[in-house]
Image (cartoon, rainbow, N blue to C red):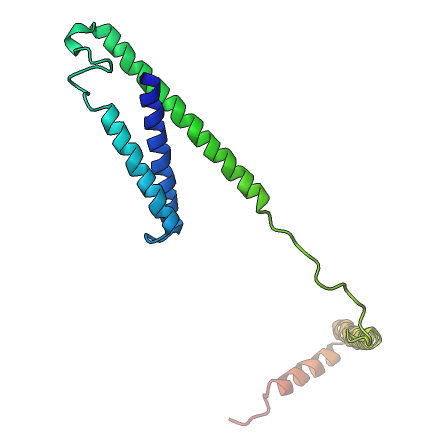
Length: 178
């Protein structure tokens, strides 16, 4: 009796979990959801009929006053253990089924067309890039060389340094009369 009651309770709990899970993705009009809800109601009715005399009578219709207190406590604890055990087994089965479904639904990448080389190259023209960067580098190097030579000459010749200052003055627009 105890095992059947705990098994029934575990089935009710597992069915409740299933119905709650289905509510996340199914509409209330979904026929599968309706069928599972009716199955849950049937399980609850069966559980209520089995537990009908709870509080006044024990399972075998023996009055509780006649059963020793320790024995009653043992029966209750045993029922709870069996209930949790059955619930664990049902949820473990659902978990394993979910893992199998997840492994089965792996994303498969499929090659649609093979890669083909282009008929005509459209990338950057390397020759132009190399020639342009070489010319630009030579121009920058020449400007740096002239600048460095001018600094050395300015250190040696104070008259040349004055000419450079005058040239900088004209570059800044200092020839305006105010």
